[in-house]
Image (cartoon, rainbow, N blue to C red; front, side, top):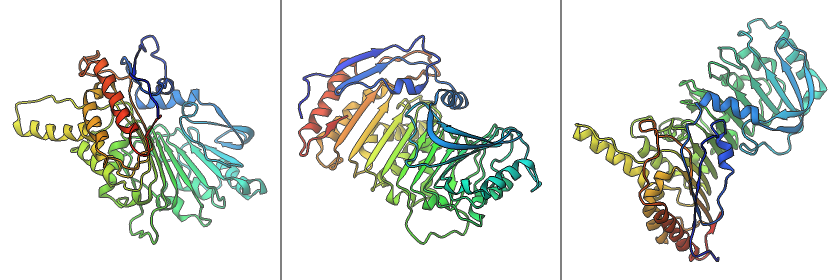
Length: 419
């Protein structure tokens, strides 16, 4: 593999683009060997981010039936996508999508409710038999979908389920396990949930793909007493926004502890400073990563930076030093069988490129690695200082270190490609 003799440095200012989404910055990809620094800009909170991204989303060409509370049913040719264009993958081969829009309705109790009747009538129609994607959304402050909604949907056999939480940011999947016609789900996506209480369904064990999008403090669990008879089928996990690192780290101590046994692709975007709120958060996350021995592809975005704010308590300060060390040494804890690695962080993290360089020189580090991308261009504002702290090393030094990392990996046999 041939490379230029030196990496380029780019400084892209984002001032004047405060309405810009994170996704628009994501697409400013540097060329191979480029270390790109972007000045910080405040990020919207998770609710605003979620809504903004929905507005910018493009439509997906798939026949869609939309059943809305207090509105006539619609049959349209497109399904509105979630997120910035290209940000979230959409399942292949979807023939017919069903959108259940609960609007601002209150929890339904009567089985004769007009809204539920519309759903049941559709399920009984021949046109419903090819529905393989179901999206349920609502805004009322109550658990959605509720048990009545699930029962009205009984009879469908979708392969993909998408749940978009309402204003109270909760979802309830427990009734899904009690349907008379089991759903042969392959994927579940949960968006905008922030409920502290676990989302529970045995389908977490049998699906191959699971996505969380701007959810927060939303654990997942298997039903009490449920004992899987086969290994977990989960192969692909995506968590974008808020606390994805805390989320996966806590799996180690729950019924989901072995869910990563067959995991192949892992994408975690901790991009708005809401992560690592739990005690020993850095250590728990590092320990989680090193247990993902089957993961071949990792995309990791972190806006956290190893900063120590010492106090008058020596014991507390030593604990902080120990925790920060896990973040500095994160390359040492990466899944050992990685073939593809994309890492993105803020400019301050470039201060620890020497750790990456030492790892790159070690032929036992990620011996199966085929491709890599290291970027330090995340836009974030320091909540205490409000302005960019000086970088250590300097930008020229960081660029040189990055180039040396790539050169060390390039001389491996086989050579590691720079993405």
